[in-house]
Length: 152
Length: 152
Length: 152
Length: 152
Image 1 (cartoon, rainbow over the protein chains, first blue to last red):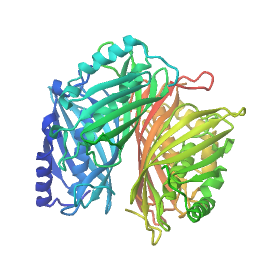
Image 2 (cartoon, chains in turn orange, blue, green, yellow; image 1 turned 90 degrees about the vertical axis):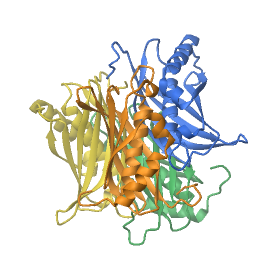
Image 3 (tube, helix red, strand yellow; image 1 turned 180 degrees about the horizontal axis):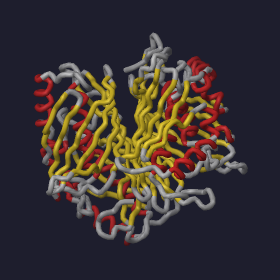
Image 4 (cartoon, chains in turn yellow, orange, purple, brown; image 1 turned 120 degrees about the vertical axis):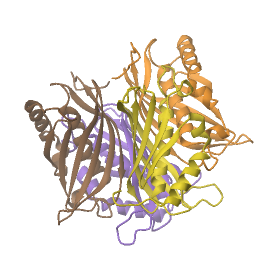
């Protein structure tokens, strides 16, 4: 997405949308970076997002990397267009062990409607070392929601 | 998975694993059915799992259907074998609007190590009507965890 | 897709499209069934579609089941709308050994633009026994191609 | 995969495997580059691999990028271990128009058994310009085939 500039008003809309997502508050996630075509969300570890081996639940990692990917697509959309996830596929590379998890979404193809995004989740340990734990490849769609019902 | 019988002890292990998942308690999900090769989890709607349009976050649906799929695979595994998600792909069919969401995981191929599972999430409205909102196709792996580090 | 009837003219358009696909002739595939929301393609085994262990190449199975899924979506589209594959995910269940391979595509969600389809490939042995060898979950898009350039 | 060196004997095994794949000869594909963790295959355009709009069939692109990904995983496997595709997901970014198609597979995670690979297909036009047309995220498994039946 070289050379594109992020409209500050669009960035503000994305921050506002993030703040109203109950799910992000429930997980304890923060929106830490917004650029044109790239968004980063950080999820600190906690037992409230663990599965039964004590690792972060695959669904928790997916929730933040899906969000990062969707908002990355939204950075390149016109004002008022809403982004919905059509589908995603996530591979889990190793157990999600770390102090925090950095989810990054990057736009690979920005169309008039359909965007294709890549995502990555890095586990950061106490000493700051980072290790990839998940990879995503996802399809997002931009829609003009009138009544909240969406649906392309 | 016709004709297979679920070992009650394995069902008890799955229930115990579910109970220790902080993520399931955080979401408010319940394990409602365990059969040989099929598991159902119910997720009631609440603003704590919503995204910014008020629908359930795609990641919330994914978390429960991944869990249902993983435990479905575990019903057919020997005692002591642990299940990890290799990867999943989820398609979102329509906005996740409903009073509760029923996630069903079904084993399509049970191997010595690799299981392939299908998943479905149905939205149930106040009048009891059900509508599919998500479909999953996922790969699970059975591992003998010694030190919690997994990794095939 | 219960209750839908296939327009014979749309079925004829699908057969005509199939006949002009060089790839299907190269593989040796036949379009064996078209219903509203469901299409079947048969691929006989031959060494020209094998990989290095002598099984059918994963890509060969994918090519026919993608085609079956795309045409299944097209059965439910209006005249003149063209179908393009947005993405697919395919799981391979066991080695593709058989005399012929039956690929079935079924529409799970038919939208104005976006369709979600499931696919399955069955291997049939000389005695007629069938065994599933691949599962697909895919996203198709209907577009009004003007200049052949597509692109939603 | 920085710092890894490819064993020339393993590269020779991969070239030999490629040569025995009927499917690659049928498509007209060539193995153009083998490095540790990365493999490139080139597929020239021809009507024998087209779909009904005249673009290369999605399945043709998938066949070569799957192959590139599988052999990329094999570069990092021990002698005698065979690679099978567990599953892949491919997004199609724009119509496959070009003189030739360059499929690149890259290992993102090399495990004892499970490898995760990324793939990309670039369309090259007559003037040498390249444009991405497909992205893959795939799971490969290394197996010790005894009787050709595979199956983890």
